[in-house]
Structure formats: structure tokens, C-alpha cells
Length: 190
Image (cartoon, rainbow, N blue to C red; front, side, top):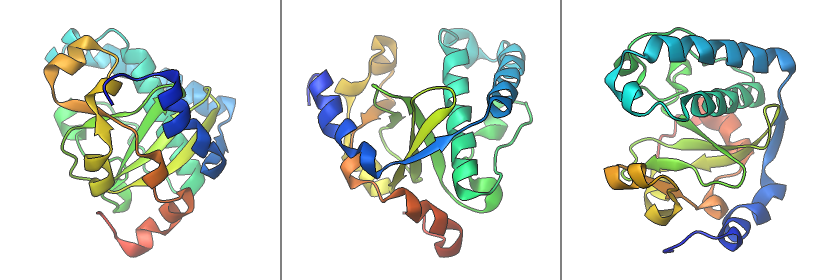
């Protein structure tokens, strides 16, 4: 996969939408996320990484947090840490506060999610269709993340140059959304 096209997105993602779980968030949740993102951006201005990578930070934080809110609503458990501090303290899997070694990777519809080239934890993949409508796509094991990836899916030349992340396209390999509901019981991390 050397170049991404609209056809690729239709083939790898759109045709699987019927299998995804739709979650609707309310206005109160969106406003909470919006307010929190403003506070985070203000607090993070001093961190070196955020000085370099501040272009679309508000959009990225909002998309990521809305995805986490959608997963919380879907599984019926709260795991989001609404505190603010040094990024190094928060570099843990998103669901770790409820004892699950798993992250949440959210991407806007029409784009492929960016993941580390070498994944060490599973991810719940979420697509944001709007600020209130999100889709839980499924559960990606470490093996799935490490196999179904391509640098051609990275839109930012700077990020591509950095060489640490890649794009994920294995939507047809995801475990169905309902398997996420079983995570606390099976302890699976692979």
C-alpha cells in the first residue's frame, strides 16, 4: 500500500461500518471535553513536545477524549483521568485505571488511526463521525496492530519523517465491539 486513496478507505473501513457499535454522546459530555482540552493546552504549553507539535493539538485532544467518552459509555465504566500534569505521568494505557492493559485510539472518519510501529498493548479503535456520534469499531490485539499497518497512511510529512508511527488499516481483523465488554473478565492483553 504505497498511496492512500478514497478507494482504500472504502475498502478497508467504510464497508465494515455495519459491524461497528454507534455511540451518541450528549452536549454536556462534549462541553466537559471542550473545557478540559482548553485547560490541558494551557498547561502543556511549557512542555517541549507540545511546543514543537502544537498545530492541531486542540483537535487531537478533543477527538481522543471523545473516543474515550464513547468507550466509557459503551462499557458502562469510567476510566478517564480528568487531572492535568506532566505527560510522562500519563503515558499509561487508557483503561489501566480499571485494570485493563488497553488503549483507545480514535480517528476522524475518512482517516486511518496512527499507531506506534511496534505496539505493546491492544487498542480499542474508535471513529469520530461528529462531536456527538462515534463508532466503536472493535478491539485490536498487539498482533493485529503490528501486522496491518502502513506508513503510506500518514498524512503529515513531519510525522512520517519522525519514523515512530504508522497508519492502521486492519478493520476487518478487529475483534467485534461486544468483545470489549468481556475485557475486565478475561484479562486478555494480546
